[in-house]
Length: 155
Image (cartoon, rainbow, N blue to C red; front, side):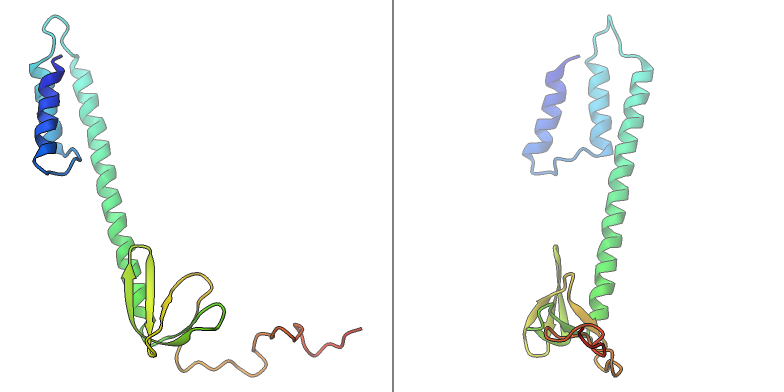
């Protein structure tokens, strides 16, 4: 098989600024170049061509599945982000809190912009609640100086 013909095909695609991923059309071009330049005394078996096509088909399907999963993740992120507008958020340490007026979506997560202009990354540990939520009496979390089950006497 003449490797230079295949290498020239790949080089031409890469120098034009086209994406370096091989699509189905490029794969077929490589397959035809392989067939044209094979050794006539030892031709490639037809089963080898079928195996190559099947393998490429599986890779192409995997790429499509990954694209769909990425789209689903983005849609989920958008739904989560829009659901935060109007909610009260509070940082884990309690230093930043307020009503979410807008959200900013980045590749690594969501940032809530609060009514006071502060920004809070929505990460594990952030408290999110409705703006009109008030905890029922006796349902507050114990402070640093209180013991859980504060009604009990120390022995």
